[in-house]
Length: 402
Image (cartoon, rainbow, N blue to C red; front, side, top):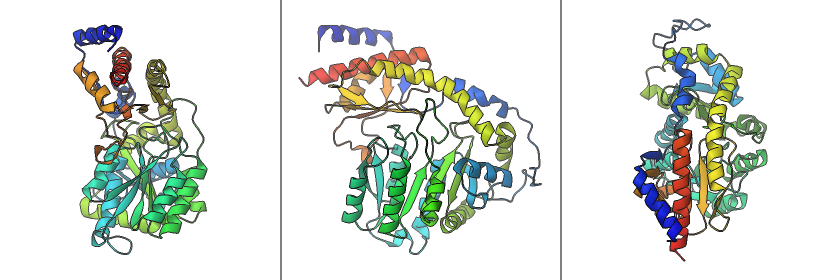
């Protein structure tokens, strides 16, 4: 290690840092934007007359379903309102296919497989692992998945049940899929099998913080391709209002929608209509949601700019990243296989980074190069310290291989 880097690293150790950069959580300043929800006086009945205090309406009150449909550009009839997160609804959709299926339950089939873009969302991988589904990885290219790799996988493998991806501000790379890419994914899946399932987890649909690429709503593209029965789209308010205290929305073709609804009927007596009403009265409508998200962007943008400024110090020979225009993460790729070492060095001085390999199935990053950073939760001062530690750790780990 160079003398200057060695002394700098020793100085970091003396600081006694306790900084957690592992999870993409909203900062307290973002959560404060929704504090009115905590003390809201909620109407006992929805505008359509539903008593939100009682059982019934398992798919959500009509006004909440209409709000979800407006965000996903779908129809209220095939949009439901769920709890907490899009991840929970996706899990229930996979479970419904596993237990029942549209034709044959997945549990009665052998060698189930799913296509997963990488770097990707660790919780998607954990979900599929629960069902013993083999994950076939496919690289991203900045505007979506590598289509040549997609077609190669579909030609090589049997019994691929679908693809699961985050089409806007992808976790963690920030990729926003082009319309052409989404269309190609749907068309390729449709040609492969009538049961091929395209799951679009729109977790960051609303989370632009810089000018972002325009994107035709996925549901509109699926409709135009006559592929609604093979497409399911999800989003949530987990990072709009409160983590675990928001609403989640799902839309799908009628067959998939009915399958998901059947599964939920076995699990949930009724949805939390009080919370739906609380959110409706707070956010009002789609325009209200978008206005609320502008406030989030004003808080999030400066934090990402701090991270960008720090990473831009690193030369292209050491590593590279693409600046996201929304979402909650930055994906940094080192040129050498040092991701584990970088994270180990950061931990030595009290800065916790998402474990190496998390962005790949079974924690296996074949190049040991991808590192996910989550700037939003920290205050600016802590973030500046964390990024300085991170950049120094990369320089040290890079030089150690000389």
